[in-house]
Length: 270
Image (cartoon, rainbow, N blue to C red; front, side, top):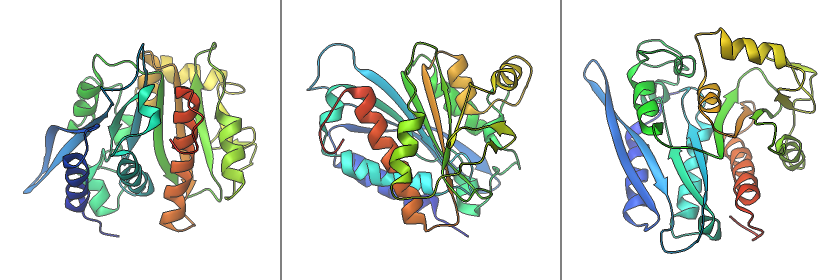
């Protein structure tokens, strides 16, 4: 399926131009032949409200071009939050809305070089998209990182959770929220790793994850951020066998819960 990245750009610019809490930052351009794509990082903060140290959250979508529901979810989220939100009194957000523009338009997992960008984060000389993302992340620390993915092989939602030992787990609560409306993958093994109730975590996978951190060259973004100090990393995987709108809604349910949880806000809507 062919999608338009210029449509995404136009929507992002329209949202940011009418918002006092959203800043759209062009962090560089990627070129494949005659085609150029600007990559964006968005800062969401309410400088007028809030006191003390705010929590910092990073959200990423679209690093695999054939997983478009995350991009649609962040567009809907930006529209909802553009005029402010109670959550912004306690949380600042850094958002990467579409990290693989070429793949997004082509409907392909990989970028214009045929590379899986979510395996490039340990390389000293990664593809340009990852270089720009890492440069955007430089000097920033996060309490939570959320990545929005999809899985063509699953019949239900599941997630990966990496966290520091002192952090409370969010995985079970997220699964409970999703399972009220959508199917969950309850297999005991998912993607070759041990899973419990739709959650793949350090528990039961200690040796595999330790090996990934120490030995593997092909790090995904979540592992890169966790290794650089992010305290809690959640990666959501939605099944592609249901409508796009519903897949995007799964991501939004997770996002709303996490922002409320980490921000300590109990309002009806984040």
